[in-house]
Length: 81
Image 1 (spheres, one colour):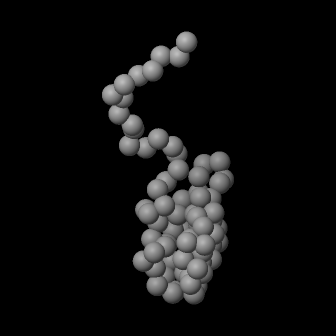
Image 2 (image 1 turned 180 degrees about the horizontal axis):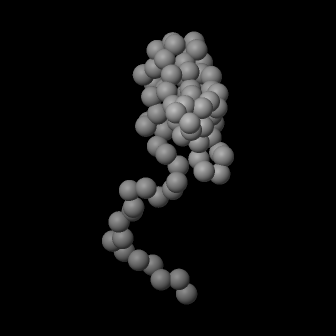
């Protein structure tokens, strides 16, 4: 039988995903960009989130590209429209 626990607080971060509101899609102007690190296994969260941001903000468009900055591979995200 599985024991049911009570009064166990929920951890502040229950998954490895980053909260969407930490990325500045909602406040970016056309021509602005930001850098986002590439996860150690090569998955680029910011590229997927840029696609989600386009759905969340249908009047805005974003572009992403993996670039090298200061000797490190990162993703740069631009607001293009």
